[in-house]
Image (cartoon, rainbow, N blue to C red; front, side, top):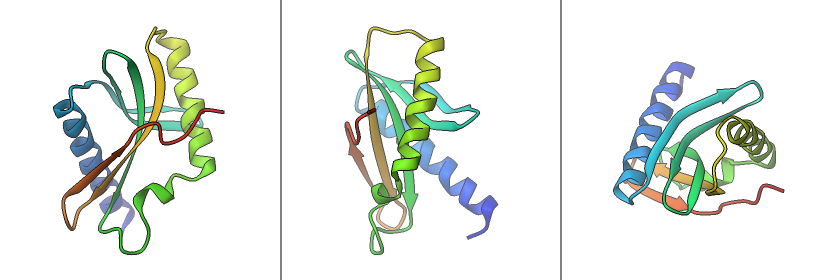
Amino acid sequence: MSASRAKLTGARGEQAAAEFLRKKGYEIVGLNYRVRGGEIDVIAKNRRYLVFAEVKTRASGSFALAREYVTAAKQRRLVFAAGLYLAANPTKLQPRFDVIEIYTDSGDISHIENAFDAD
């Protein structure tokens, strides 16, 4: 897959994830929040949580589950970016890191809440 095609697939996945979260009652606060050293695909909130979501879009889960691509290094970059976001946007909501898996072959979406801790 070319880099531009992968970007397009990722962008479609992020839009699908945002719509999925909206339907679950979340308010979308931001998409593609970028800072030097990290990026957060979707930032959403509900009454209790401010969710920093990593979206993984794959053709299928036959080779590996999409969540397996959220490595320890990726988690550190997400936590770093979330820390900068929270410093600039204080909130009383509990921060949480989720992973949203999207499989284009089946249209399945999985939402893994509290996918990792910010240790």
